[in-house]
Length: 130
Image 1 (cartoon, rainbow, N blue to C red):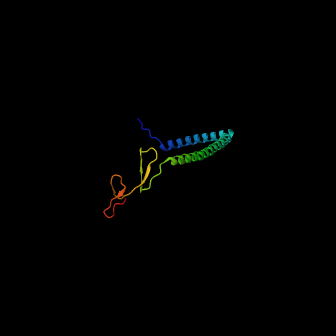
Image 2 (cartoon, rainbow, N blue to C red; image 1 turned 90 degrees about the horizontal axis):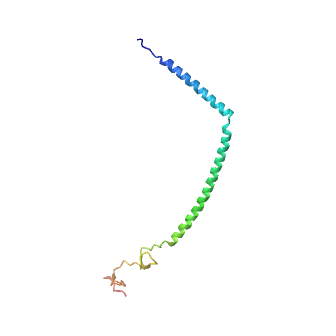
Image 3 (cartoon, helix red, strand yellow; image 1 turned 60 degrees about the vertical axis):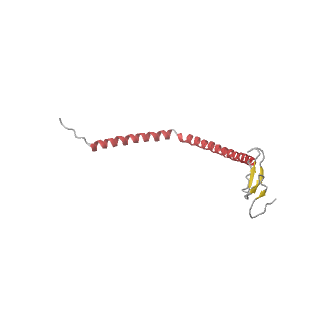
């Protein structure tokens, strides 16, 4: 049997030539189709109409967003009206029923108090005050 020697250079040349001819034919067909059937004119009008529709939707959403921000501000102000006022550090709240009604605000004293009522200040350096 005789061994067959392949000619790689000739095979590569024919493959390149066939692919070049195929690409030229398809490119010519595409240019011809777009030249005789102008899809782009209708396409441009459709794109412009779509852009106008999207811009009107964006404008309406921006207006709605401003209205929603104003409504949120009203709700926030209303909630802040009902939030309990924080006491300063030197005051304390005394609740009859915790969390219900209005608390009694008392000035906090850091001095030791005598007795159960806490009406007198005990200090070795001061006399008992009435």
